[in-house]
Amino acid sequence: MTSRWTFSARRITSIGMGLFLISCAIDAPAVSEAEYSRKIVGTWEGAVGDVNETMTLNGDDTYVCQVQPMGFIANTLSQSVASTVRGTWKITGVVITLKITDAGKENLENTTASSTIVAFKENILVLKSDRGETLSFQRVGAL
Image (cartoon, rainbow, N blue to C red):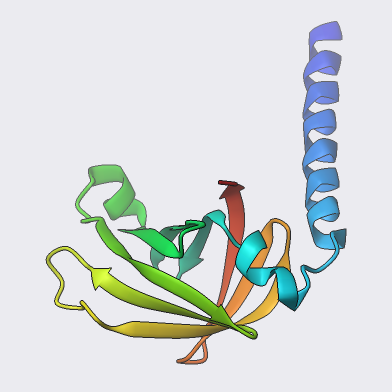
């Protein structure tokens, strides 16, 4: 009986801590527009359609983006192919522009993509792409 209680108490404590951390992230103050370029530096993860994306924005205005298709078959059997995109980034007002300088086998060099920063808190970044898609990222590392 004691082991069941211990397991349940641990589970409830873990769930409670998770909810607490989520609520702290949600209640965190928004980053001011003047601080976007400084505070955005770090590693961010999110799902874009059916693709997992890890984006590292460096303090020298360069970035590396790792794109990995997701899904049961892709994740279980490793049939998907990851790609890495590199380039430079710049924030003007509430718009972040990514210029691709290296896309591996893809012919995307010298292409740019822009997104509007819809919400930015210390560990949450919400972008609206120039195609109208809303993309949410969570900070997974600071640089």
